[in-house]
Length: 100
Image 1: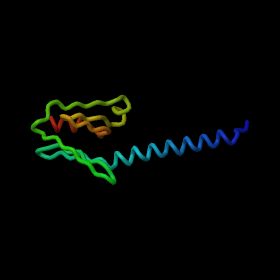
Image 2: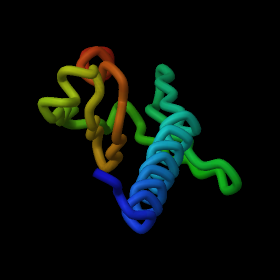
Image 3: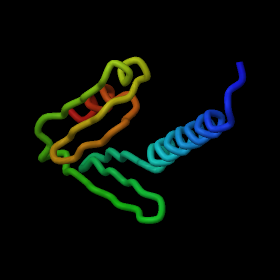
Image 4: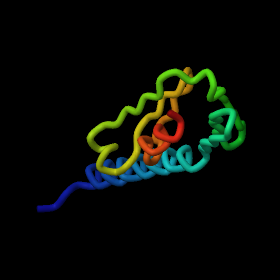
């Protein structure tokens, strides 16, 4: 059975788009830095425009870890500390133990 060129073109475009989305997600994850000092938790992210947010550790109430099933299997999740939400943190439970 022969497949026409429109299906091949659509498949190639879909593959290129999914590769672009995956590359963007990996780039954002790579360019995000979480720094824990004795006084604060700092999140630094961005490539062309670097941004940082910090939460003083003395004012941190609850530390919340959210993980999906896939996140638990692959070892990543979302960490919520004070008003700061950090997505795709590797081993978030270990970091939550350090902050608590």
